[in-house]
Image 1 (spheres, rainbow, N blue to C red):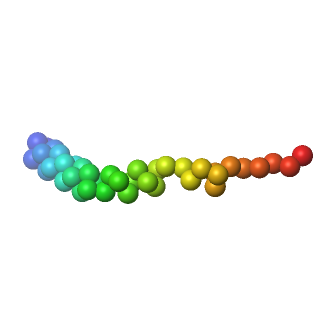
Image 2: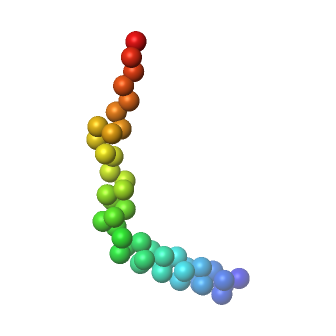
Length: 43
């Protein structure tokens, strides 16, 4: 069990490093596009 836990921790660390390389792109995708998100309703 401890071996599997250690391997999982190493894998999560590797994934975190991979994501860290792309933080700029992720932040751009997470930012709303302003007026494109506005929903207008007519009464």
